[in-house]
Length: 123
Image (cartoon, rainbow, N blue to C red; front, side, top):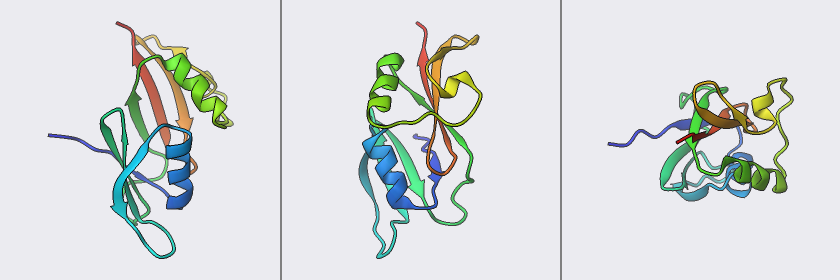
């Protein structure tokens, strides 16, 4: 069984550019429309994520956890690709932070206000 989050976006072309060119996702499938793509399947490290611009597919502003390794190097890679931290006062949006619950995390807001929480477990 797999659980695959569906992230809502307003403009699929903008979302795909951000997810694939900045955040290391690759597009593996989806629908093509004349003016705008409406649905895309993305993969990263063997896991899937759906992007959808269809009404009723999720809500804007949701959060999705992305488990990763070497979180500091990953954050630096994303910054080198043009990632600009969100205009938020939370330190976790500006770089990796050790959390009291035993993880190291940084958060990225996509162009539609959804948050991806990149998380590394302390083992």
